[in-house]
Length: 370
Picture 1 (tube, rainbow, N blue to C red):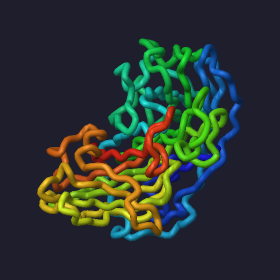
Picture 2: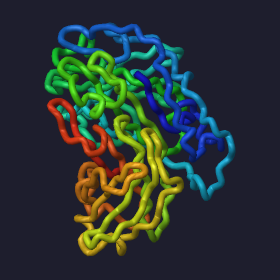
Picture 3: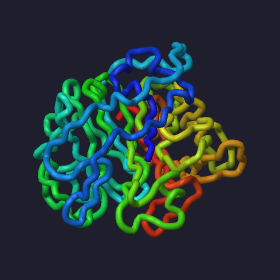
Picture 4: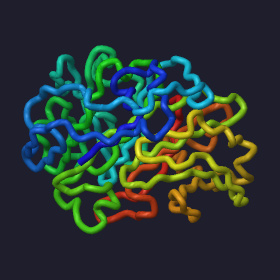
């Protein structure tokens, strides 16, 4: 299993450095896993990338994340000048084999991370539905992201089996629940005045999540006993053009190819929005501002967001603007001039429909400044 993270400087707290604003694809680096100790996860459960048992684990922050290969400064025209603002974290469920997830945040200092006596997020027993988003203004349980390392731990499978249990009471795992322990986010990375997008991508794996089509659903190298649940991370651009709609695209699927994005009105007028976006990349920087309310067509709700594979001309996948907004918890009335949005694609490879246990390639729109 290999993991892909965008904007690695995010995870080492270096937002202010010009080298962390590289807009080329060299900033996207695949990394080997840190060592893990395995484990069965207890009664009926299945653990991904971590030891089962106990409420506290010793973890090193992911210092194994590389800095971008290109250290050259980018001009403001390339990256956009970002003013400080309230720190926000938008999490999207992009696990291709999880109709819903809930998340605990293990926190601590000095490598000792502990589960907290609070319910998994979101607290709604339904969980965070696939291709939907949840916004955190602060992490639950009083986590101090300025001084504490944080590790998101994702729970998939039978949401009802979680019941009313708190995060520190989920060991051993309930029957039918899969646990994916994700990368450690170092202290100081989430309180830097940015709007951070975090997509849980890949597949959580487990019994029955295997067979023909598994790699198209989950990504190359996936196997049920070697799942590839991972974090894909980027900062979304907040500063808007007051008269236009700002839009970026984020590759939130490790199974997808390099994709370009365009908007096609109900009258079949097409506008290019982003080019050759790979897993873990957000583009363009700054956002494209070619769209306005006046250029969305006579029936904006029926306008299409289309993705096209690199060096191809045919549309590989499409969704209506209204559908994408709805998945992001927004309506057509929320899509206005003077605001930025990020289009996130998740799930299986583009053009792949739902399978017996996986979910299809899906697009959702979230606010870049929630």
